[in-house]
Amino acid sequence: MPTLIGDLRFAFRSMRQSPGFYGLVLAVLGCGIAATVSVFTLVDGVVLKPLPYSDPGRLVTVKAAATKPPFDTNGSFTYTQFEQIRRARDPSKTSP
Image 1 (cartoon, rainbow, N blue to C red):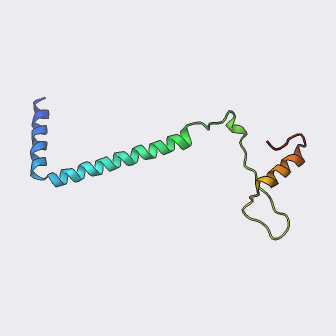
Image 2 (cartoon, rainbow, N blue to C red; image 1 turned 180 degrees about the vertical axis):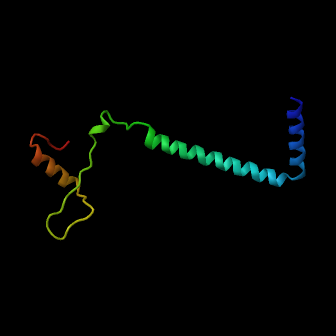
Image 3 (tube, one colour; image 1 turned 45 degrees about the horizontal axis):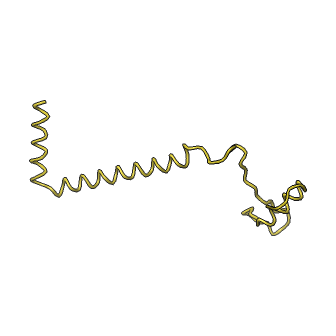
């Protein structure tokens, strides 16, 4: 315990002699802690928490495949085209 008190006295004495250096140290430490918390929050929200759907294993990506030139490389289509595909696949489905 006496060494801890002596170390704290030395630290405060050093801070009084060069406050700019210790201010910079505290600022860098604060930025590091803030960056770590931000990255963890992002990873927690994107990777660790489950998706907000009842059965996320059934989620799929639907892409269009062009078979005639000019070939569309991005594979996207409109909602109207999606509805046409859905009706052709299952006629009992109607638009909401």
